[in-house]
Structures are given as structure tokens and as C-alpha cells.
Length: 312
Image (cartoon, rainbow, N blue to C red; front, side, top):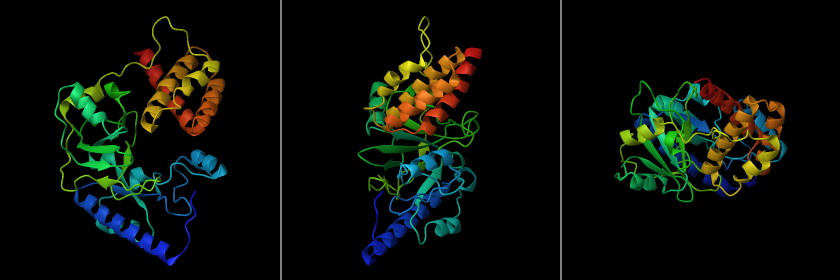
């Protein structure tokens, strides 16, 4: 973690940071979005809420780092997110805090384009025009594309559907499998690489998610379940499975972790000892730059998902 000197220049930098964050929060409030404060990478100590994945935070603290800085909420974001200017002014005055947007109360679905061209490639493959909506540049050419939920009564959640493996992460509304929905870090915030999340055009409208993309998100993904006739995955094979994650960027790495977790869940349902699977998956994930918490959480969700598929 970078140590920042308490100099007058540094204090002026923090003041400018707070001004930019406050201006951004005011713009986002006028757009009707529900905000909450998150950690800021320039703070000497993480400002994360301890209740937010406490096991992960303790493990990272023990190693001397907390990764990724700048993305963890400082409070219970799902219940505290507000569209209130006085609350936002209090959060973003004095000490820099990144801005989080809670997608569910904001009525949003955000396509997190991990390559910067994933949406354009998808449109080209389906012979569609690129939708013109509010878009945020994050880092290294990546993009967050903001859309309104196509049907607020039955919102789309964080599932990738038929977009699995296309270079996206999805942040959406509350569903049966995602009680609180997702959140994104908003424009004006600072990434731990020092890049600033920047709105491509503050005046752009957030348009409804095109129906053809909604259909892809609702579609059954390429099944994470093993093909008929394949043997169940063995715990000793997990190193090879997770080795595929090493060269992937963050978005595809998470997708592959989910795929691997589903394969492991099948093994558990086929009788492989769950404790052994969890232990090996966690160790492999840590070696690849993921946390044991992320691996165990993915496996817990995967066991539920695969069990429902088997029962269906």
C-alpha cells in the first residue's frame, strides 16, 4: 500500500479530490441514482466496512494489503444507499470517499465491459447498432455501460446468461439469487491504479436496455454442468482447472472461477468430500491472485445452482 506524506501539497490534493467527488455525486443525484460511500485508494488506511466480507478483509490485512482498494463500501450499502443531496454532501466532504451506485434502487443494469470492445463486438456479431447510453470509462480502456432495467417488476440481476465468456460482468437488480443486486463504482471515483472513472458524456441519457440484450441475459448460458458421459471432477484436478485463470483479465477470470466452482459443485453432489474440494479450491485461488473467500463463496453459490439444475 502506498504511503502518502502529510504535506500541504498532499492535503491540497485531497481537497481537490473531495471537490471532484462532491461535484460528481451532485450530478449523479440529479440523475436519480442511489449512492453510497466506498473506500478511496489515497487514504492511508482502508475505509471499508468490516462487516463487508470480514473474512476476506482480515485475510488481506494479515498479508499487508487490501485488494482491490477503492471498491469496498464503507457501510451497509444495500440499505444505506440514498438519493438525497444532504446525505451525499456529508459523505463526500472533508475526507475522500469513492462513490458507489446501488443498481437495484436506481433501476439500473450495468454492463461492465472488461475489454472495452465487448459491447461493440456483441453488437457486430448480432448485426445491431451500438446503443447510445450513459457510459463511464474506468481504466485501461474498459467501460461501464449504464442501462435502465427493461422491466422493473422483474429486474435482471447479476447473471450473465448467454453473455458468459463474452468479456462482461453484469451488475443489476435484486433477484431470487442476488438479494441486494449489484453495485458499481461511479464516475468521479479513483481506481487503485490512479485512473479516474470518467463519464464519456455527462449529458447522455441512460436508455432502457435493448430487448435483444435482455433476451441474451435471460437465456440459459452455455451450461457449466459437465457433458453427458464425462467423469466428475476430482479434487486433485483443480490446480489444472484454475490454472486457466492465470492469464485472464479480471472479468473473464471471475467467469472462469464460476465455471470451475460449478464443476466442483457437481463433484460435491456426486459424493466428493466437500471439505477437500473447498480447501483445494481456496488454495489454488489464492495462488492465482484470488482470495479463499472468493473461492468458497463461489462454491457455495454453485452448489445451490447445480442442485436446482439437477432437480429441474
